Length: 177
Image (tube, rainbow, N blue to C red; front, top):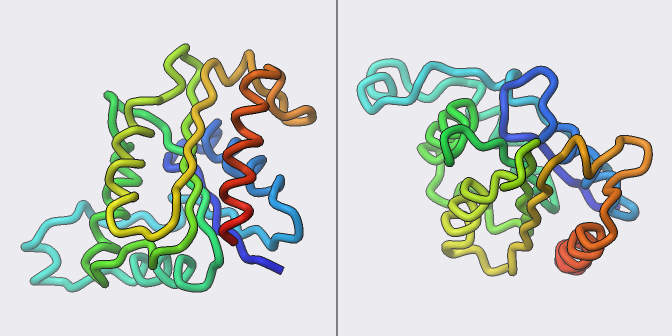
């Protein structure tokens, strides 16, 4: 059984990206899913001075352990001002200080969703560009626009064209596990 770590890159308690990450992970056959909540890894804002004076927070090591102990990673990005949320960027900054290979070259699937027509494509493009560097796997990505219109928790993706694109990305990710 493959272990999957999934999370919405948001600190919102009712994050649609966390919901979408959980749904996506549940589509992986024969997988043990560990759904992470970024709020469980809240840390001071990263700075070189803080790292020098106080060291790397224990929450960064705990998050990194989850990444080490998995076969694949699913991240659904919320978009704040066309970029990562502060919560995700801060965790990313801290865990990158532990080791340079942040995601351990694990197979990844990058997602984004929003209630807008853009589907958080700006952050998804930036994340894909950054996380593809050095990763030996093809990293599929998928953006779901208009989440409230195109998704129901009981049915999943309601738009057939979007469902086909999702399934293609699912196949790429699943084959790499």
